[in-house]
Figure 1 (cartoon, rainbow, N blue to C red):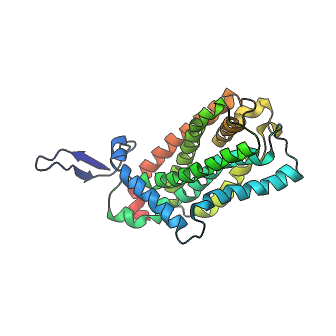
Figure 2: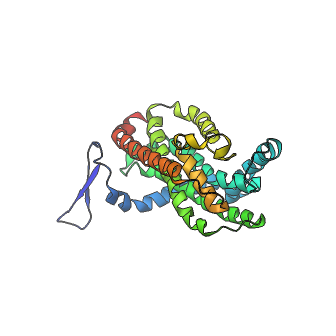
Length: 284
């Protein structure tokens, strides 16, 4: 970890690289100092992602739209999943939007440390910047698709009410959950390359364990909703969907449970990442 101190001969800080211990490397001031690097890393990933593509950022909209179409056919038309009177396409899209941001963060952030191994061995910077940059890219895609979601809502005659002001709250909860999972997976991937092979299966199982294509009431009774909300994405999807299309309030217990689990995962993930980052350059 770098430690800065005053230098009597010039105005620039001096950095001393030392092994990290526990929570010692978590210096928010240093993260703020390297904020420009975070922007550069995120912008580089955006450029690489859409480089030499004919549609560019339109892919950020095509992906959730195509998934919504598939869900509408199989769950809305064939299975006739109940949505309390809400048109199924807007019901599914409202759940897919935060989920797509979460899933993209997992996919990109899990390999972020290994993919930037040359940087790790040549220059010092807070290693937390790597998974955080991947999540930042996902937030950009989320913002683009959110505009489309409002357009779809108006097309189906759904006018977001006062609850729409809570959208930043559910977005923040989605980001916390994405960062928490990303810290775990990115650190584990350095030591165990099996992560890249198990991640697609994990993402699929997590998707169907989250009420994206169906309402929670369809499979979980009121008695077990708090237990079901131990999946932090349950609170994210339910809260975000309520903010967009209205309907019954999901209830405080499942939402608080999901938020508590997300924060616990974030703290544990940050601790594990910071404890293991000292060996990243040796292993990658």
